[in-house]
Image (cartoon, rainbow, N blue to C red; front, side):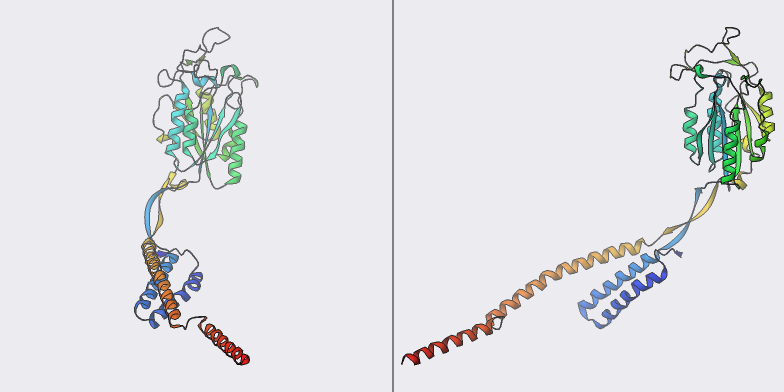
Length: 372
């Protein structure tokens, strides 16, 4: 047991010591019913002292704790991620949704952020410990609107990711930063001659993670998406057409490009073709070291001053009852005493009335003598 003390000990002593001394002194010098009253009041003071000291006993429970791991999800939202060659004929984004949630659950207590990229790269979710926010974002993940597509560039999130990693490293340099890059690796944007910029400059800011590739060498076709529920995968929306052939475009995974990104960042590459578990993606990460086991036994204290509080409530109710009973008795006693004084003529005003009567008789006698 320990004392958590609601107030500093010296405050408790100054406040309650005089009250306790008063009740003890009055209990000793009083007799009968008055002694019982002061004993009750002393018990009330003792109950207050117990509450002020706040005794508590330790209780051990498993509690979620925040680790020093920061997960950066870089998610490809370009039209090719709607290609229907994941786990049979499902869109690649279905695999992304599964893996985002699975990785979040595999690293409990971490901080998570999401950077999405299509025709531009933006931070979709700032660093947060709320794993539900990651799940909510994954559930609403869609490909970019087909009409706005500007081609796929795997290096498009490079600057945004670099800024996020640098800011995180400056803010919490001791934290561990894990990057998970989820894409099919296609690089169709020819603005820079088709050459993707290297991610190697970011390697020193990355402590772990993986590059996850989606799609197959055979590839898959993609439904067009206009931002409504009647378009995109799983609908009857028309397929995206390849302008060169006039036929439905086929997207093929570029594993060489993905392996290059993985090598630049110092990460492993993993080809994701079905919703398998992700344990092997984090098995090389020492969760016990960077996340304190994700969960740990934390010593909590349960306050046990409630018996004193219950006793105080009962004593207060008793005190109130006694005061209520005493008030009518005192009033009746006062009224009876006042009535007795009036009957005996010794009450207030009786002396002045007698003096006035005597003076009146003397005046009458003087008038009679004068008349004679």
